[in-house]
Image 1 (cartoon, helix red, strand yellow):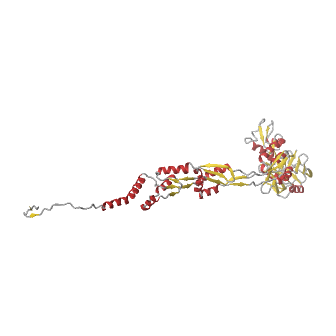
Image 2 (cartoon, rainbow, N blue to C red):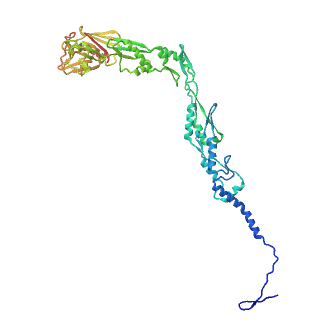
Image 3 (cartoon, rainbow, N blue to C red):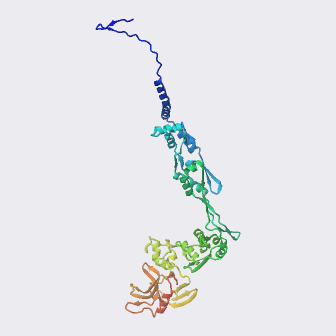
Length: 520
């Protein structure tokens, strides 16, 4: 049946009635979507996993620091674990080569080894986080382990400080062979070996094999043997017996009293001074200066009160003489003295009485003058050695007698010559005392008297710059020879006069230092 309708133009339009169509549902799109979802699901899971690990700063799975699994650990956890394993809990057993009894348990840091926990953790965290995500994705799904090495540092300064301290403990110095004197017998004690640790070799090994040493926990310190320079002294025992048997003497001479002294070094000192030259194995005496000073102190007691050894005595030169096989000769020293002025005395009379030139006394008493001398005054008198300043010649001596006007010359305690002399007149006397040949002048000139004095030998300064002495018959500048006819009687102004031949002979015989004794 049809029904007609009208549109605006009032024209009829047909009405169509819908009828159900029998069709099957189309699921293609569904399957496509499901397939895409299945394909993308691992990627979505991987991406989510990466995001999770990234946000929580976790290492990826299958990451190892050497043999330690640090997968799924945070940066802080990894750093803590690495520090504990390699720095805190690890020990290195240090042994000495060839000596298992010597062992030290050290921390890695003591040997300069240190694993950087943070740098190692950063390296572990960086695994799988490269700029190539596809490769990172493959790494995650591959299941392969990714191994990184600990970041290790070596501090040579710290290692050397530790090892040198240990080396000091281990060092044993070699013992040289020695000679001892026991129960009156010389015994040769053999030398003994020492040892020293070679720090440099271990430092080099640590530098080249630090990681291996850290993992094994073992290190070895090489000990080198130190040989004594002298291992056996038995061949020198005979030398020592001969050496110690030799006598060593010291001689002293007192030019003021003409006394001689001789001392010997005691056997116990010679024994204590025995030494052996390492390179030649020759025995010798190593003389101890302190022992020598003690010997001089004891020997000085033999000199008696008022005498001693020269304060300027050089102990070293004495020792050198002994070492050269010589017997040293030293001078006995007289101490300064004091003198109490008697009533009526003058400086000149005191000077003549003591045999000390006046100006020496005045020098020793700075405030003293000729005019202020009074009875009871105590004067300092210089040492008589001031008049014998040169080393004396002990086997020669000149003795002059003022009363006899004679000179006797001695050599080796024998009379060599006797001469007639003329000494000073009463107004200008020759001073009695102990003096010494100090100067030689072939023809001296005395301007005060216009005299030439042949073969002049000065013996003391009567005044500074004015030397009294011994000489031949003087001559005036006019050519006149004086006192030849009066020889044997006082005639001079203080000097001792000889005839020309005697003066020439004495001039060449009397060495500087010969003692001249003038007696009244």
